[in-house]
Length: 484
Image (cartoon, rainbow, N blue to C red; front, side, top):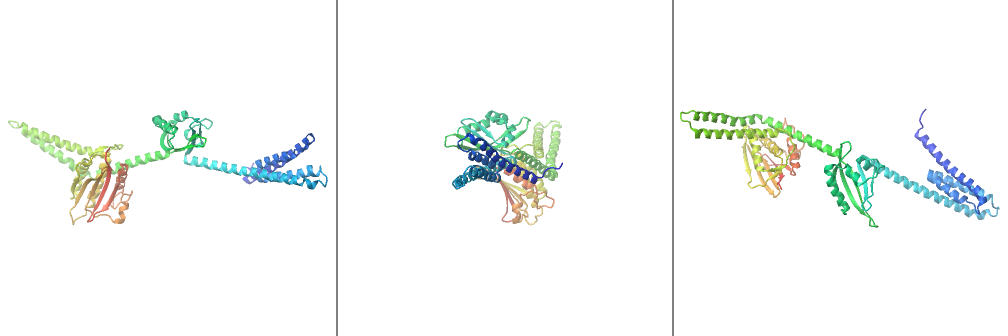
């Protein structure tokens, strides 16, 4: 059997509306004819107005007008023409007109109410859809009585059936245990009359899932003196998960670029490690000769052993730096000596600089306060900028290849690090794109090094930028906050 089309259904619905309006007037007429012998006056006018009101309420304008026309016609025929003389009919005309006007007024009131209710329903439907699509719920809390109301989306966010009455205890049951004390503090603020505030906390659902909520509230005070806290809460779980995934991806990409940079410097690093190892071997042989004499030279041998220890520590420190740069670890913000950090980074970069006949000069300001940062990440920034500077000077033949790294304190709470080269530089139109992902001026470059540097520095609360030197080359600078 084929299903009815929407048009057919609409026609049937309209037919029912008109039929109900007509039957209502018929019922009013029958009741009036039955009751009239037992009453001093005809009840038809009152009953017909009720029928008209019902028809307009049930069907709208068209059925209401139909009920009005039928009522006026029935009243005229049964209660004017049938009961009065021909001379009395004109005197009853005002009654007919009055019934028609009253009926039309009733129809208008009901149609206006239907329109208002329809607009309200549409508005509520739009609001419910908007809340569902944006994962935003609303709530109200009458502080004096403790009554709480939730929207449908708020029920959905909390995972509670709409038949359940919301209470503070129910809310706290859903709050993550680690955030419960914080949420209680925010509720106390609201109860004390804090006008507007915003905070974020987590929910622990019965199935173990965690939701992240952002809550905004406003304290409304009415003329009666009653205060009500109204607000909205947004489920930002997807946003937080996306941010965490992005952070993880950025951290992994940063590690890959560090490993790539170490790969490019592998020959220089191997040479740098071989130097203390060769020194250890030579010094150990000398110590052996001092001890193998007829009269062992203990003091000379002891000096050799001390030198061996120093060289071994130097090699171990270099290997530790390489291992730290290669490993995967969460950022750890600690107080750091920025000058010491630069020294450790330069120790890794210097062999690569020497291989390209580049001299590294340090102009480090003394007495700088400690900075707040992650050792590995800040070292990565310095190494990236330094390697870029060294590579930028690899084709320079008409001037000295000098890489200058300097520190200064432009503001009391900011430290500045500048890496200046004498390379080929970058065209002015390319300066704004230097720190964009996948932008590179190198034939074999990935275009991620400077982009990662910017992400790291911005995560540390600083900024990084580049500028062309007055003579030749570029200067890359970044700031990092002082430790407080």
